Image 1 (cartoon, rainbow, N blue to C red):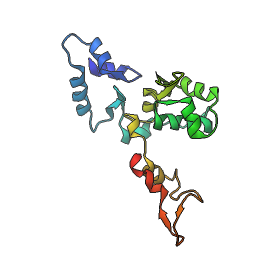
Image 2 (cartoon, rainbow, N blue to C red):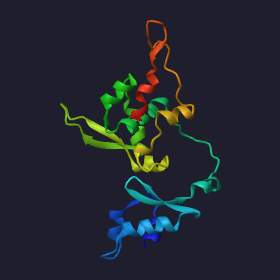
Image 3 (cartoon, rainbow, N blue to C red):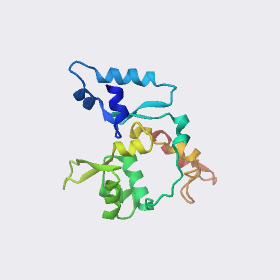
Image 4 (tube, one colour):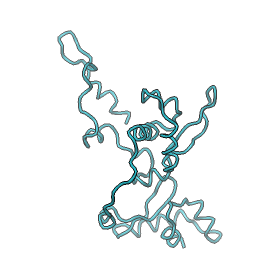
Length: 193
């Protein structure tokens, strides 16, 4: 029954939802784990997406499912930056996003991410004005093949992929008396990723 539900649902489904659909006394969590093991090394996998489970094509066979299409709607640079800030700093308020980006965040940028269902409103912050926070959704995790936001690439991985420079921006290195760098600032943040 769990296998049929996972096979038929488009969206990842949580263990609690599975338990409500099963006869009384069934353990959906144990069943999902048995299914995950049974499907190892096969054409499909049972994968965890956030707090939910889904059946997906095995990563080594993903090329069979690819279809070359023209992307009709790309995210703007502002939307990509905003999404990255939310993913890496969640829960985060609009003011915190603006502080990190250095520019104001337009309403349309946040609305686009909400419409894509890649972000959602989080809890209100316990500060004056009780601002709303933003967090990424299971749809975001599912789209990027992540189990949780902790699986986002760190600084080392981003540098290895060529997405970040390996040296600090000009003028940012600390200079000693002899003109040598006292400390490479890029290493200061390695452990925080």
